[in-house]
Length: 538
Image (cartoon, rainbow, N blue to C red; front, side, top):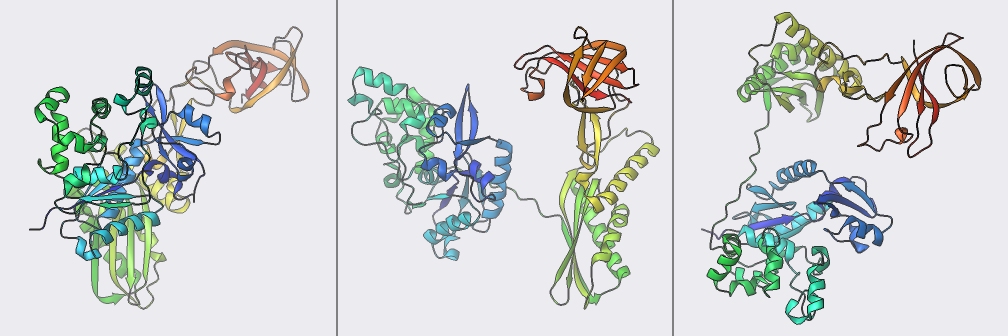
């Protein structure tokens, strides 16, 4: 039985390249994350690294070094989803692919390397194909996942030789105190980026791991720094120490990580379970060309697809029907649904009109129906009256038909929002991806105008009150009646440029011309206050 071989693929710029790989480069760019009270750099573009920035560096220090640095907040959920998509891409190299922490993949390539011309050729193929996707990749290949992980991230990054601020035993007391206060990003040794692939020959884990820093053992917290203070900077230094003393001082995690890297303790890989695709196919004994035959084939496919959806407790939110002609050409029609469905009759009624777009040509000999987007359908015991449910389904089907023409995202509905700020009292949501607003619609304490616009300056006359006369849009207006004031405070947790004039006192002003305007007096804050017109009532 061949020895186990693990390939670790690390994407050092995963966060930044996820955002910039389609834009063709974004200059000096960084993804930032929160590290306690600080904001630090989490991922950098190649231009940012060339400018001298490093991951883990505080944002303020980075901005002092590079004035034209562009930053975006980290989205861990989106990065995790992107890494899972990369895991599906990597299954062409190995049937067992797992995601590891730190933006990387683990591939068990035992028995797979000969298909690509050897281990080195396989690892280089991974790096080259990742570069074609706009991603930087570094690979480490070893007998254990821990060793492969260490080689991918720390190969060529040994402890800094000679006299330095990190060699605590060689420095004076003042230098040692200064070195202890330096950040991790300042103590990081330069890494050799010229070799994207590092391979440890089978059975030679000790020699491959010995020159690597102890941080390559995936140690928690500041354990690597505590070991460095004792003079244990390399894995080779750590492997020659008494195990009992290290275990008592640092706990069992240190010895477990060391044994996992050296192969003394097994470390299984949790492969990503890829769900089987929700697709059905119908091969026809004779080519078809009539619309009725195409509709009958789609009905048979929908029956099988709905049965599989029912087994999984899901409903389709999108359908894709592909028709392969006798000449080898493939035509496809797509349908997005406004609600999760697994009713074959209702789905056929929505899909039927789109079948007319398929041109049979010399005949169609194969049909394939796929549900690329699905959604869990939770059974409800008390769904209310049957008529209300039927109206809801009919509305969703109507949205589907309209969305087939203008797009589902173009059909919106309004929902009430928990805000008193004018213009923020309602949310605009996509009708296909939201439920109807609960009745009754909450009404504000005071009437709101029919039309709102950006606040326009008003010049009051006769004492500065709007109840007498004022000038607005180059005309003089006289007040016949005024109701107010209604005080609205800005949302202090948001920096809204429209509300930098502070508190507002709103008035409903009826002019002698019959116009009913919505005026307010701003009391001033970051900007000076004054009188403004914000809207008009019906």
